[in-house]
Amino acid sequence: MIVSIASDHAGYDLRKKVAEHVRKLGHEVLEGGAEASDVPYNYVDAGIKVAEDVTSGRADRGIAICGTGIGISVVVNKYKGVRCGLCTNEYMARMSRQHNDANIIAFGARVVGQAVALAMVDVFFEEGFAGDRHAARVNDIKALEDKNFK
Ligand code: RB5
Image (cartoon, rainbow, N blue to C red; front, side, top):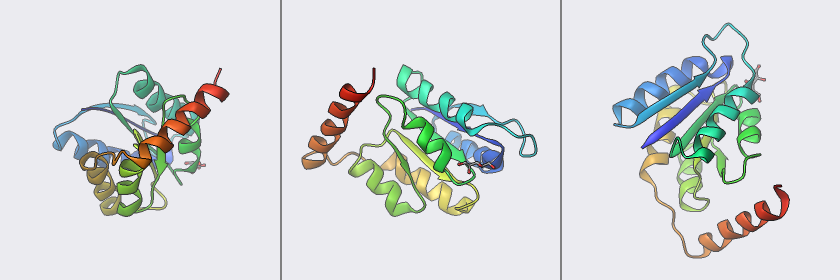
């Protein structure tokens, strides 16, 4: 897969570890966002990078990291076609794929440690969408997008 990964300054150190891990899993990484942990970088711009890579088709999946994961998850979910789960543990990452067909995962570098982050990333790539009743709900989300996005 091609995976877009971006973060603000708060997520910089964890992003570097995550990007290295994702490359080792055999994926191609498009990396963006902050260039250092001590130079402020707006999480909105990092979210735009991931969301635009995914919605344009440049990337198959996205990983969005800021301090809490909240700001950047709000940003990417403003894009039509993005289903981003803000996750703090493996179970949430698993459910984001099985039930929500998430195409972007967000997490907070000030909230989760590296081991949890990498475990969530593994699950995010391993798990499939369960379909059935969940497909109907994702279709309801798509209908909402058609109604609310210009
Ligand atoms: C940066 O200080 C912080 O506000 C940001 O990383 C994120 O947590 C916002 O939601």
